[in-house]
Image 1 (spheres, rainbow, N blue to C red):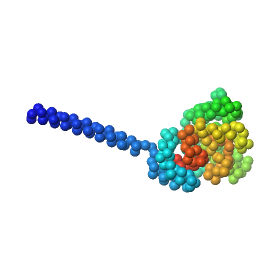
Image 2: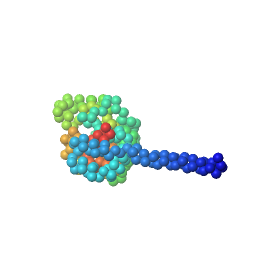
Image 3: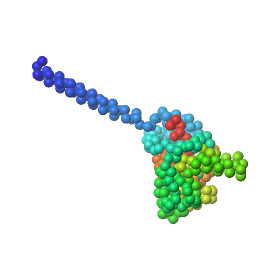
Image 4: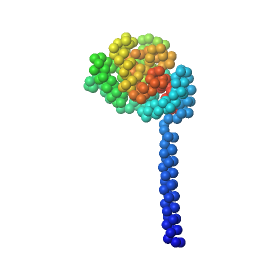
Length: 265
Ligand SMILES: [Zn+2]
């Protein structure tokens, strides 16, 4: 074979290899959208199977699919434990692991008793929120935080002995059904609805979402959440979660949690 044709073959072979590697790169680039955690079909299915979602909410999701997908992707980047449903029909196991717990003692925040703990990320967000509220001259005190399963057994049984089961079930969670077992929940001040309308409560209503907190049991949603209105009970759902809840779920935490639970499963 002449040198010229040998060179041509070499050149052709080189071009082929380069072409193949480009195609591989293109394929990889094309594959990445499929690796996105957001699945449009799953969104459609989840928004339908969550039968409790009001029609307006369902339509709001389907009519804003692109924005919804982008916002959902942000929420899915957060740890899933911040969105676990804990209620009377979604019981936590006795050995549920809330992650690293930190003590609230000696951290420069007001507490009504010693020995309370919170999940670490939740605590850091809470500290920022309380520092900001203190700068506004407000007085927020933590009255309850992480409660383990055994504590809830004792509390629930105490209430039953005092008020009977029917009454107790309207305001107290059976063991496994309390959000407090997640370690991501804080009760403020008097743990009474006298808290509603105070400057502190109004400030939380306006600002808690900026720190990733949302009200778990709002007024008028007793049939949805299964619990009476608790103006003092806030759960950390991450900043992305709190924004997601405001934007698509009328700021009702339980609707967002139901949707995410259905989407994931
Ligand atoms: Zn509470």
